[in-house]
Image (cartoon, rainbow, N blue to C red):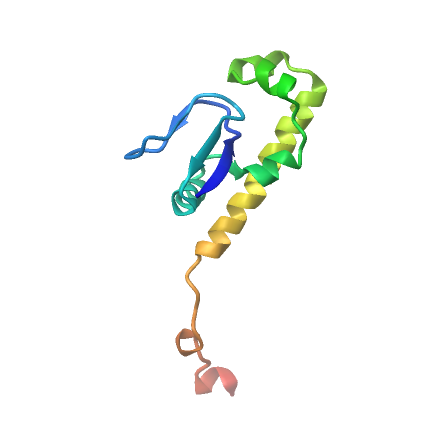
Length: 117
């Protein structure tokens, strides 16, 4: 189990699960494999450790938990929100790389005698 935060810009839910995301910064504890699956399918979740690296204050989170409040948010908050989104993108790419099937030595393509030639 891991703790994740939602950094999306609109409500979302994971089908066939009890997880629904209704506010920016929402915290959820969920199995890591389910979170990885969701992240791989572009549900904007990041581990709480990554979230904490950006230092969104409790006051900012309370003020901007609703997505529509981001329109009138301070430049400081927008900068933090954008940093969190970039961290999600990086994390998403890492999850995709981790889930990529590994090619064993036996499966690697070999050069034909014509290519070596």
